[in-house]
Image (cartoon, rainbow, N blue to C red; front, top):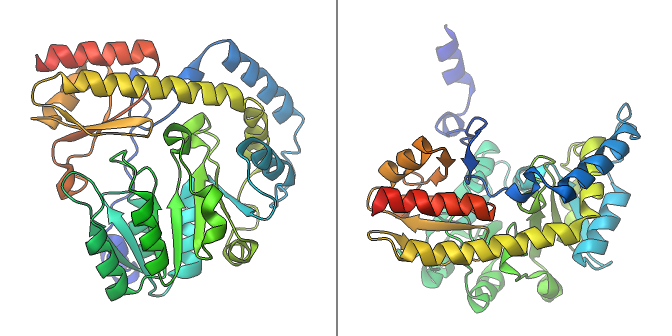
Length: 362
């Protein structure tokens, strides 16, 4: 047999049918694609962080395996983010690893996961990778939650795991708290609320987590300046965290990741200031997009704006030719036809984007 035949006989069909998560090569222009903090590219505060990082990393025991319990980092997370002592924390290499661990612990071998769509594709990929069963429930055409369809799917499919992104990626909107509560109470298993964009929504379910025995909160530091560090975490009752911890790799978060996160969390006030600047740019962009003919921006409480264009592909290529990279999501889901997701950058970067869009569309 040749390699193609061996692969076909060896790799599960559902895995072969998957597409790898698309990652764009490094971009030298204005990058408004992946919800990063462009304010940290340069400036006095960045220089100070780099200096502290260099000193701490140089002094770290990079030749030794890390302490997987990461006590110093968890203490810093509790201090800066207000995580209560009764809630445990599990740390991963980005939210992606947390999603993988949950899928392994709950879905492996055929358990059912339910997610709203369109949403983060890794939920589906991680489930199928462990031979889990994935069920997607479509949002309404305006990206609002179809609560009736969601509750019907829960009753029919009895999922062991439900994902809710709050606010949702890639649409940027929050679902009503009352509707989420109905989903939580109807769920026969675990509900994970993904709050990757909490710093921009300034809303969280963390204060209410003790009301529900089947809820965990997942977050990441990637959206507030630490995308390159790759650090995500999940918060909840120790009983839940203890079970998920059993499938964690023994040394999953390295020494350099832990040190970098500790140093940068010491500057959390500055990172929050950047989040405020991005909120201001988000609101400005929503206004500017609404002025353009043939453009429909959707309300957002994240650090990005989703908008529908008459010809998103043409606008995407025209922006790219001007050195501005955004995300074309038109092919990702039927509801996403002709949509571009635009991440928030610095004031100067958003100025350039708005000028470019006017040149292209007007």
